[in-house]
Structures are given as C-alpha cells and as structure tokens.
Figure 1 (tube, rainbow, N blue to C red):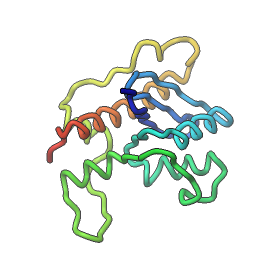
Figure 2 (figure 1 turned 30 degrees about the horizontal axis):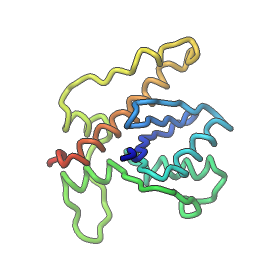
Figure 3 (figure 1 turned 60 degrees about the vertical axis):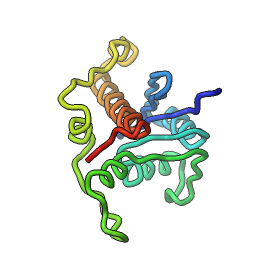
Length: 161
C-alpha cells in the first residue's frame, strides 16, 4: 500500500520551507522562482499539506507568490490541515458560528503537547550551502517539524486538551 504524501510547510519573507513528514526530507525554497516552485509543490500535492496558522497567513502568502489576488483563486489538490485551528478547537471548543481561534503560537502549542523537549535542526542544515541563512533556515525547519509532529499526534488521536 502506497504512503500518502504529507507535507508540512511554513512561509517566511524570503523562504518557503517544506518538510515531507513521511521521509523527513526538508527543502528550503529561497526567493523568487524557487519560492514559486515550492508554492506549486504545496498546491499540487494530492496528499495532505500541514501548516500552523496557514489559513490566516501562509496560504495568503502562497497565493501572492503564485501571482493570485486571493486565496480563493488558489486550487489546492489535496487536503489542508491547519494545526492552529485544530489544536484551538481541541483545547477551547468554539462557540458555534464565532470562527474564533484561541490559544498561543506554535512553540507554546508544541510545548503543551510535547513538553520542553528541545527541537534541534539536523546538522545538514548547517552546511556551507545555507551560508549565513542558517539561523533562518533552521527556524523554518523547526516550524515545519513542529507542525508535522502536531499533525502526527493528532492523526493518532493523541491530542487532548
């Protein structure tokens, strides 16, 4: 049985990072044309794409990268799971019709579910190729990783208030 693709992604001003949750392969797409390639990879994935606050930030920026005037013009081939919305709904079930998202950001949410376990980027992100962008790439990888780990825990049914 084939494994369905799961891509955790995070947008930054000059980077769009994508972590394949199944293989743990991370690719940072830097600037211009490379960011367009990353955006197309996300929207064309027929599996699941995972973000933290993607509906309110990352997908808006990806639509801009693709030259679209709004997210509503963007077609996503697979499913999107926004872990900020999912964890908010678990921890603070919404009043019907309010659409409000409660709760802290990604790092605090990750700590709530995983404790104070340090998230350390792989040593390969420190190679010369990344150069002076190491800190930013490492941070982007961490965001992708944490969103992916929250997703895996949710899919196992292990996210509790």
